[in-house]
Image (tube, rainbow, N blue to C red):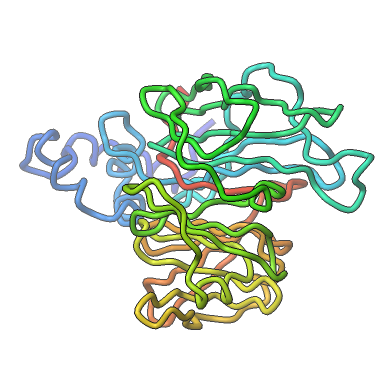
Length: 328
């Protein structure tokens, strides 16, 4: 059967591009060095050969959105990665056969069970989850390594989940929190300018806040203005700029340390009820009942756009990590 004219033309163009090389007149290894400085979106759009280069194992990987997803009213979790260039989702390989990680339980009809996950050193770490009998599901963290598309186990966690950090795959205890009020909820600690900032209650409720000095290994009270504006999920951009989403008002704000105050960035209905905020390279990813939204805070004015989710799945958490290699 003869190929359609447009398909034949496209195939011919691709063959001609391949014969010419990445950049005509330059060896491919030199061309790769030049192309590595260009935005991935530009490479994806302009040339078929450059697009193939983007996904090759020899080219620096661009970042993708890794998400923990769940079907509505189902206790199970799914792991997917979103390619922002092709706007497609890809399922991660299944994790090791641990006890099932549950998001919901019949005993708690009105709320979801906590699933704690972080991104660290280019890896996705699952730190805590719950089994069907409401016991901890993970005696050791589960670690996903995108370049090898593989899961492994981290060092065993202490039954007492105190503050610790992992060095050479061993947990080293750090200064204790001053009381148990900061251990009641699965609240994230936000890394910001050599400190970890955290509060004892999620959401818009009244709360207490503390700041851990990493170099000095001690805790202190959170500045009053920072605490008063902590009205939803918080994230820090490369640990320098701190943002919060006021989950009640759908307002995105930036912390101004010189004034100990929060500055309005934008208001949008998709930010109402925000559950998680992730910051990376000028963009913020927000998980809310509206789905996953990306805010470009580097743009003037800042822009917000939705991420289309896989059919039948809702977001639980998101992380930004390097892309996985393509399967052949």
